[in-house]
Amino acid sequence: MIKTFLGAVLFASVLGLFQFILQHSLGLKILGESVVSNSMVGVAKLQLFDFKLLRAYGTFAHPNIFSGFLAISLIFIYLFYKKEFFVRNKLNILVLFLLLAVFLLTFSKTTLVAFILLPFFLFQKKFTPKLKLFLLAMTGVLLVLALISEVTTLERVRFLSISGKLFVDKPFGVGLGNFTEAMSQFSYYKLFPWNYQPVHNVFLLALNEIGFAGLISLLLIFAYGIYETLKNKEYILFALLFVLTIISLFDHYLFSLYQGQFLFWFVLAYVTKSRNQLICDL
Image 1 (cartoon, rainbow, N blue to C red):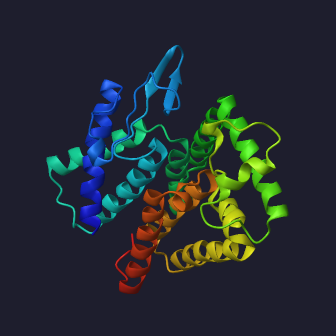
Image 2: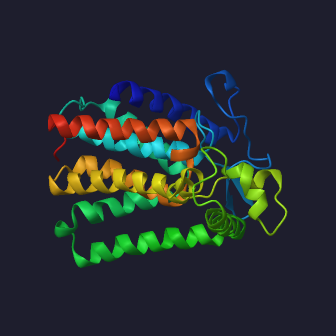
């Protein structure tokens, strides 16, 4: 299953690379590719001075989702390499670099922050104070870059405000998938069609849609998994859960979109299975 997962992500990565080079989609909508270009409104782009660069979409609804799949894939490849399931030849090294390159071309700050912080938690005893400072500085730079985009920042603050008001009025939740249906009732400003998005935090979204009990259940899933993997020094499994946690704090797709839901439960299933079989040590 992991090899099938990696094969699918590799195929999407090839598409994502050509999307970035050509700056538009390849016309493969039948395979799930979004219709995008750097001239379209509402498409995820990187503003670089006067240039707008289309971010790599692959076959996903948004580059951030694609980045999440790539991040998990890179951890799986590390596991295979460590366990010598990964044939160490030039072709596979090329595959690794392709996945890493496309991961960067998604320009997803959330997963990049997760990857920068991950070694800090896993290998901090081996890090010099200067290296620790460098990792924290890199994280700070990424967070500042994330805040530079005024529109994105304002939107996320507004979503947080709507989330808070929605919880006060509906503490037992509005039902799965109904956040965007209810959000207009709790917004002080007129919502345009592109404003109808879930709050960019999985835990708050769970609170709003399935109530306080649902939030506690979700927190317990994360807390138990992280505690057990760290206690038993199952660092690869901790890495998988850590990436999911960072994504959950700054995005909503693990809870709101099918592709994200698949990634979330697929990783949890792998963590559970691997813990039972004790095949996950670094």
